[in-house]
Image (cartoon, rainbow, N blue to C red; front, side, top):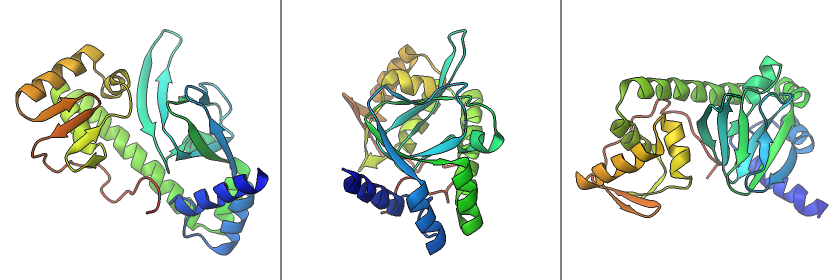
Amino acid sequence: MTTRLNNSKTDALERIRLFSGLNDLASRFLANAAQMASLKRNEYLVRRDGPADCFFVVVQGRVEVSLSADSGFHKVVEIAGPGDQIGEAMMFCGGNHLIDARAITSVNYLWLSKEDCLQAIVLDPTFAVKLLEAMSGRFVTLLADIKATNCLSARERIYQFLLTEPREGNWVRLSVTKGTIASMLGIAKETLSRELQRLSSDGLIRVEGSRIELFDPPAAARPCPNLKRGLES
């Protein structure tokens, strides 16, 4: 079992962009320091107000990152997938987490303590650059989301979301619930369903269950065109 876990961790470190391309000292250090673990669907990786003393990288599966309050407020901020980081900004800031992070599928992930993260940066400053690139990309994406919420109609937000989702040809497969998508876009679930029907009636999309075909889709505007997400190919 231990050998199999170690092999999985080594394979994950080689595939994740954050850890790839580092010098031998840093790579060997991270191979020992990084820990691999798993979650079942609906288990929490991070809870609001929990200690932010490490950060996480998704290896397999998807994690819903959200903001919440005791008043009942709940807002999905992003869906993190393979190669995405969670919690590093709060780790560097100190204090406790502002977010909840819940597995919406079974999840394998790596985690690294703040102390070990700082040591890896000492061994290879490239690691710091990679962390900054990822954090900057998420910050700019968040600004773009705020702009969309305040400047675009619900219909425009939904269509832009579909354009930026991974596609096979012109087909998008919705891998999260409509409620989650609606929360991300700042609209009601009923509005999402209604606008999808209107987009279909206008000949822009075709809906088949969780699959949506886009007809003659334009290129999606991306706030961080040079930022690569996911795993190394």
